[in-house]
Amino acid sequence: MSEIETTSALRVRNLRKSFQEVIAVDGIDLEVRAGECFGLLGPNGAGKTTTVEICEGLTEPDAGEVEVLGRRWASDADALRQRLGIQLQETQLSDKLTVVETLNLFRSFFGQGPTPGEVIALVQLEEKRHAKVVTLSGGQKQRLALACSLVGDPDLLFLDEPTTGLDPQARRQVWDLIEEFRRAGRTILLTTHYMEEAERLCDRVAIMDHGRVIARGSPRELIEDLDRQGKPLTELRARTATLEDVFVSLTGHHLRDE
Amino acid sequence: MSFATTAFLVLKKDFTIEVKSGEILYTTLFFAVSCVLIFAIAFVREGQPVEGAGAGILWIAVLFAGNLALGRTFERERYGETVRALLLTPAPRAAIYVGKLLGIVALLVAAECLLVPMVAFLFDAPLFARPLLLAAILGLGTVGFASVGTLFAAMLVRSRTRDVMLPILLYPITVPVIIAGVLGTSALLQSPADEPVALLWIWLLVSFDVVFVTLALWTFEPLMTE
Image 1: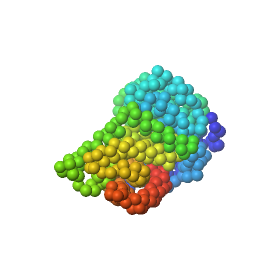
Image 2: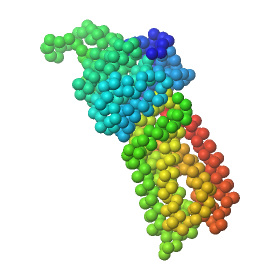
Image 3: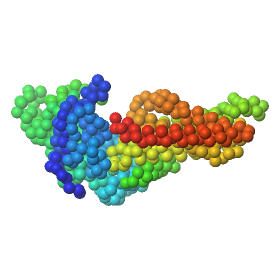
C-alpha cells in the first residue's frame, strides 16, 4: 500500500453542481478520514451519486474544492486514478467476457496490485474463473465488480450501492469483503440505501437530502441524538432506535422518484 | 500504461466480445449487403446499371452500415456501463477513444471487403482497376467517418435520444468526407480512371482525417467528463 500523505483521505468543501434548473449538490462539505469507512446516505435524488461522481473525477463540479488523498483532479488525475478503486452502481460489465478476462483487462490498466488470480480468490470466484459474466448470479456479479475495483490495490475505495438487489447471504459476503479491506487500513466511501448496512460497516455517515448534508456523525451518535429528541411513540415495542429511524425521521416518509 | 497498449487492450476487449457473439459483425454485414441488393434491384435494368451509380451506392452502404455499427457498439457499452468503467481506470482517455475507433474501423473494413466485390459485380464497376487508390479512398473515408461517429456515439451513450441524435449530428459534420469519398471513387470508375482527381480527393481526405481525429482526441476527455 502506498503511503497516504494526509490523515484526510477525502476533503470536499462547498461543493456545488446543477443540471440546468436542478440543483443536485448544494454547497456540501465532507471529510473522510484515512482508514475509516464513511457512509453517504440519502433518498433517491438526494445528490449522493453526483457527489461521488465528482469525487471520482467523472463529473466536473460547478464550484467547490475536492481533495482526494491530498491531491486534486485538475493537476494529478493520472496519479490519483492509480490509487482509487471504484465500484459502479449496478455495474454489469461485458456479458460475453469471462471473469478472468474481465479482471485481466482492468488489472492491466494499473501499475501495481494483486494478480487477477489473487483477486478472484479474495472474492471467492475461483469456480467461476472461466464463466462468462452473463452466467453469474447477482451476488457473483457484485463480487466481480468489487474485484475489479480492488485490482489496483487502492488506498481509497468508492462503493456505490454495492449490495443493492442481493439476497441476504450474498450481501453478507460483500460486507465481509468490505470489512476485510477496511481492516487492512484502507479507506472506503460507501453509498447505500440500506441502513443496516451503513450501521454495520460505517464508522461515520453523512445523510444527504436535496443536495445538502442534513446530518453527520457516527451511527451511534445519530441514533442517540434521535433518542434524546424523544420522538412520540407510534407503537409500543421493546427496542432501541436504529439508523433507519434516524434516516426516516430526517428525510420523511414520502416516496422519491429518481 | 502506454497509450498504444491501452488502445490495443480496448480493441482486444471489443474483438474478444465480437468473436464470441458475432452480433454486430453479422448485423452490419447483413444490413450492408441488403442495402446493395436493393439498389441493384432498383438501378439495374436489363443487365445495365445506371451510369456512375456504383460509387454512390458503395458509400451509402458503408455509411448506413457504419451508423448501425456505431449504434450497436455503444448500445452494448451502455448496457454494460463499460465505457464508464474504463473511464474510471488510470487508462489514458484518448487511448480508450482510439481503441473504440479502431474497432469500428475494423468492422467497416470487413464490411467493405464484402461490399466492393458485390458493387463491382452488380453494377459492372471497375473498382479493382486501381486497387491501391481505392483502398486509400475507402480507408481514409472510413477513418474520417468513424472518428466523428465514435466521438458522438460515446458522448451520447447516456442520452435517451441517442438513436435520433447520432445521425442528426454525424451526417452533417461528415459531409466533406462523404463528398470526397464519393467523388474520389467516381473518378476511379471513369474509363480511363481519372487518377489526378482521385489523388486530389485522397489528399483532402487526409486533411479531413487529421482535423477530425485531432479534434476528437482533444475533446474526448472533456466531453466524457460531463
